[in-house]
Length: 294
Image (cartoon, rainbow, N blue to C red):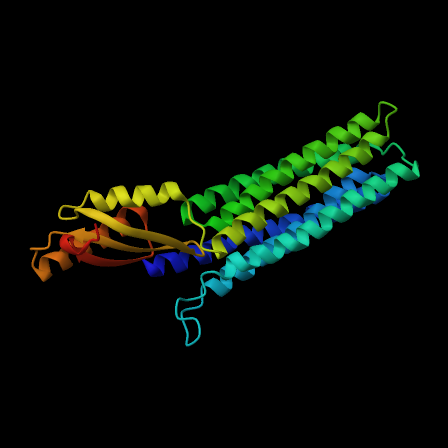
């Protein structure tokens, strides 16, 4: 199972590499056309994609570092490396998003908006279509590899596709003698960059602080209670190590059970959680019922 998880990390690298190549090409195209046509929205979208390059690089680096085996000062392995990389990327994205919004607001007060050429709008639509294809690829890859970081990258791809559509709508709208719509679209793009950065930061910090979904905890408890010989669950805690889940629990067994029987029950609990929920590591401790405080 451990080898399979390492292989999934290796496969997940393909999604990050595909995203990096796509963002390099699309950001270059958008920035070039944006400056050529004077479209604030398309330039903002291009800057958005440059932050996505950094985010995808962070995911790639995190995936590679996560594959390192445990060593003398990382006894649990390096699984959290990709989560840390995502956290760093969120700070960079937030900084760019705020800069894009600031530039957009400044441009409005300067009052020098010009209607951009329609080629900027068509560029945005074509790039959006490409990002939808990248999103589909990464989403399928994430589902096959069970990679949370690749799935996060896929969601970012989808967000970029919608940003591209919003950019094009703003540029098309600016053709109706309303050039400020292009600048308004740029501010909206900046807002979406900040929102994506905040979502990544919130999820990364949640996992790094050992936050865990309560509904999954309940599912784990139901699985444990379904094992014959488990009378109750005194304590069950779970935490994430990158894409892996580690569970620590205390089960209550019949006080008259032989030590071997109690051990066998613990083994069944461990195997059930690993098999049904694909838990990376399960630590089971058992207590006789009479020792449970009233």
